[in-house]
Amino acid sequence: MSKRVKKNRPKHSRRIVCLGGGTGVSVVLSGLKKYPIDLTAIVTMFDSGGSSGKLRKEIDILPLGDIRQCLVALSDSKNLTTFFNYRFRKGGLKGHNLGNLLIAAVTKATGNLDKAIEKIGKILNIKGEVIPVTLNKADITAVLKNNKKIKEEEKIINCPQVSKIGVRRLSLTPKTKANPKAIAAIKKADLIVIAPGKFYTSVLPNFLVKGISEAVHKSPAKKVFVCNLMTQVRNTDGFSVENFLIILEKYLGKATVDYVIFNTGKLSTKRFKEVRKVFPKSDYICYDKNLSKKKNFIGVDIIDRQIQKLNSADTLVKGANKRTLIFHEPNKLAKIIINLCRR
Image (spheres, rainbow, N blue to C red):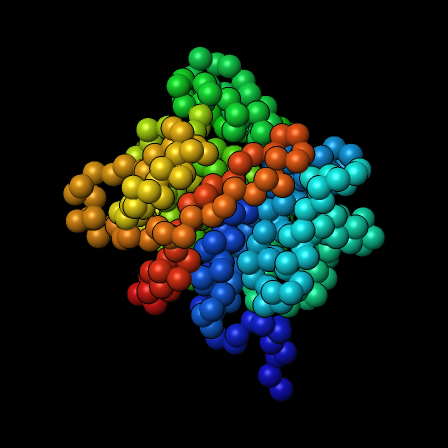
């Protein structure tokens, strides 16, 4: 008798694991979920601002915003996800997201975040799995090149000296170990995608978790890095594709990236001016013109021309950060990733 196959997990399908933060990973997932693959998101757990940060402090729970975004991205229940993303605007719940509150409630009821994600995943009918990179509480600490220490995600994002002085090293306080489910997923992967996102606070911290970089190194999977579209004001001003890769591989340890996907497209002048109104100093990630000639670098126009509207609700909780207005075009990006997986 054949073994029972989990719902929404195609038998004999390719296994793709995506690592990163909420928005970046969710864009990648939204394109990949349309393919007959076994899809897993391993999500950073170190937010300190916004609704996630407030819940973390008030009810002693891990930050849930990035988890919520990935669940929504993988869901086939559009009506439910609309409510899941609802943000309260008044009263004691002002700024809180309904999805965050639901995950928090189920976590407290079950006593386990993994179980809560599994239960809510069934309600949302997600295709794939969402796994916290760790189940332990920790904060990111950045030591700048002048030896100044900055602790907590929110403070690192908002510190102008990060770009001006540069980061000497990142660490987690306290040190934390990987979620066993994350390690298991990496071991079984055919392809590992390091998704775009806030570089120092959403992407790199995954590899500070004990066991993650080692598992990525030992995995026979191809490793793909999807570079950001735009610089992050105060954190990655002036960065090039090459800068991102050099720093990433420093934190990957013995693991190396097999392919780098980077954007070569640009918005119309009108649309770019709209972005600059919100992020005056943000710019496209630059790259060497000869980079596309190298077989490991894939330079493609993958910028989504439909820029996002600034969500005023994101600023209702102290410490909330403005979300990017420009995303990768998920279908184009997914097609490239699937082709790499088939090689």
